[in-house]
Length: 102
Image 1: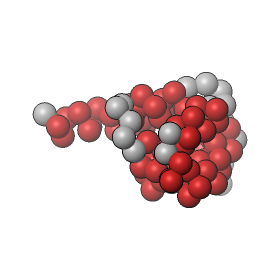
Image 2 (image 1 turned 120 degrees about the vertical axis):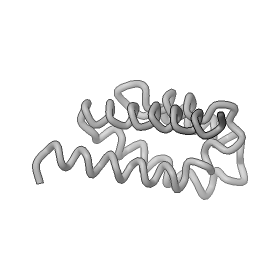
Image 3 (image 1 turned 90 degrees about the vertical axis):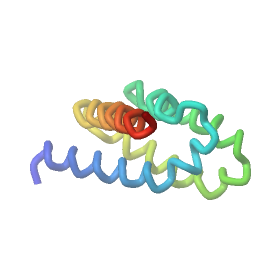
Image 4 (image 1 turned 180 degrees about the vertical axis):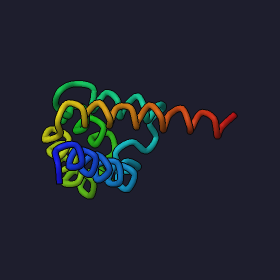
């Protein structure tokens, strides 16, 4: 598998896991897409911000913490273009969610 295909596969895996476990991390967030973007905006996943989000939901933190930290490691291991792809997916999802509520 070439590098581009590996990046696409890693991005799809990260997105799948985010859909599966994102609710634990972002339940009750006023703007979940903005929270996702703040987590992945820099070159590395913002673990401190993720821990603050989890601290606000201690009942869910124990279940979500291992998965969130694994997602952080996967994101950090992506090539820069794959990280950009993750950000574009978040923005596209936000646009589609906005269209559904209209």
